[in-house]
Length: 257
Image 1 (spheres, rainbow, N blue to C red):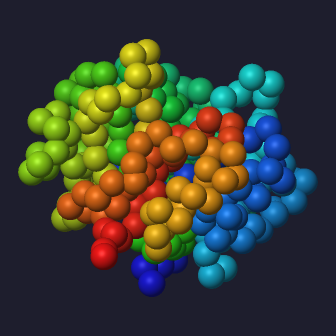
Image 2 (cartoon, rainbow, N blue to C red):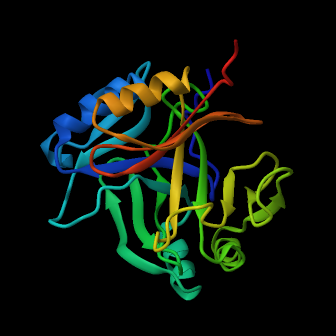
Image 3 (cartoon, rainbow, N blue to C red):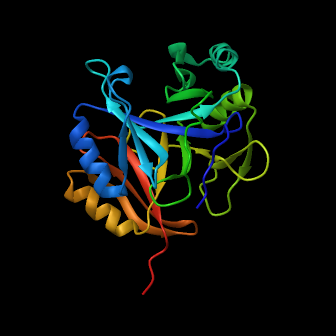
């Protein structure tokens, strides 16, 4: 079971969260899809719910913080210096949505848009590292960024986070994996058939034991299947929305028999 107790290296997708209009309904939906249990951090933290697998943090869900706030999964990238990262992303054409701030007893963060408008967060760990379980059912297994101009996006993220990129055999020509050292951290490419007008965004892929069962649980719970499930060289993948329209993907073993 891949678990982690030390801060993630700078630039690594290290956390994922979602803000929703109905916290109870979201817990019911995602509990059915992923089997998560939930740790309520209490009113001092806005009843932010840590989604857990075997007692380890996999993601979080919280109540919307402002009227009109969209409900979407946000990927956080690790940093050793959030304030420095915030200055760099602004200098390279990004936009700060939330200036660097302390999360008492946990870490320091900011929220931003890249130059194409894809939202992401930056997390500097203190007591809370972010994801504690990954590449296991219920845990984050992959992140990728969908961009109208992938080359421009690659330059932005390289300038801010030091990313390098490698092409992927069999993938669209504009899709590359993201690297710092060694294994890929995620991917970055074009909009991959998204409807016209879809803004740039990051997509979180969660591991599941059975992609078809996860799709069935999601659609039964009021979500929608956007694509799949279908077999790929990397697993059986489906793209879904929850009842509030938040997009996510599931990845399970290739179907047999």
